[in-house]
Image 1 (cartoon, one colour):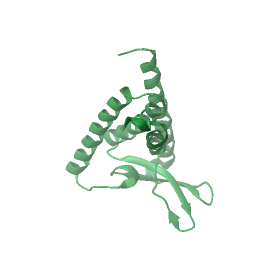
Image 2 (spheres, one colour):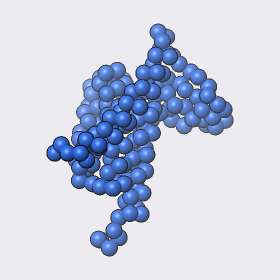
Image 3 (cartoon, one colour):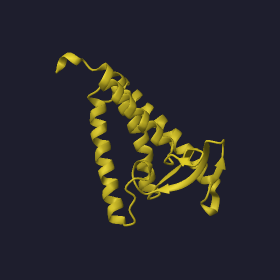
Length: 160
């Protein structure tokens, strides 16, 4: 179970987790006592701290603790399934699962430690704002894109 390949896989996950944690710690520290932070980087990018109690991009946010805890438990169960999928995959597909695991571990940590996830990357064009997200969400999204790409373009079409 513990071999060189698995150590590299978990190191990759840990690096993603660390990048996410450092970015969130810097933003939260910049918010200070007020808990608010806004910095306009460019005409289409700003850093705007919000606390997300839902899932990806703030979807399914709940006011009640019971729903939040059930949602967190479901996310943890899905992450366990992704760990199993990572072990049974290889190549680009495995990298996709590793990226998802790195990002989800950062967001799960936040859900447990802060009871919500700090999101702060705000992309906008004129009056259109995309959902505010964080570094973990970027890696989760890239991992899903890799899985979709490998499913469409790299799977053996003759196995049907």
